[in-house]
Image 1 (spheres, helix red, strand yellow):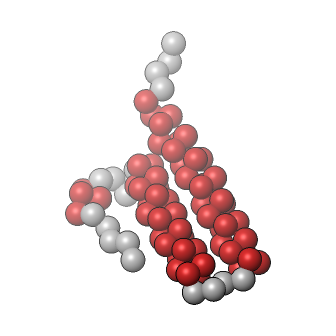
Image 2 (cartoon, rainbow, N blue to C red; image 1 turned 180 degrees about the vertical axis):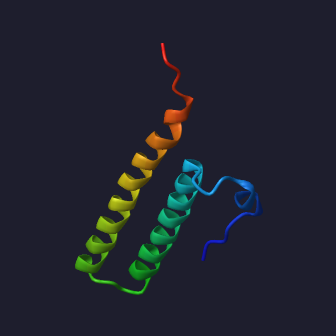
Length: 76
């Protein structure tokens, strides 16, 4: 579902922003799938499992964003 942008190819492989970008796309894909499941009549238990996966991905995104923003923190 997601595609890699050409600009990503020019970033350093270990760039923490890549991880943030990947997580954002991943969460978007998970939400799309969750909505698709709901539209097709998934059970409440199945939707709760999907919500749990989305929540874990959001926590991972928050951690990745903290790591990415750490490079902007200056020593006082």
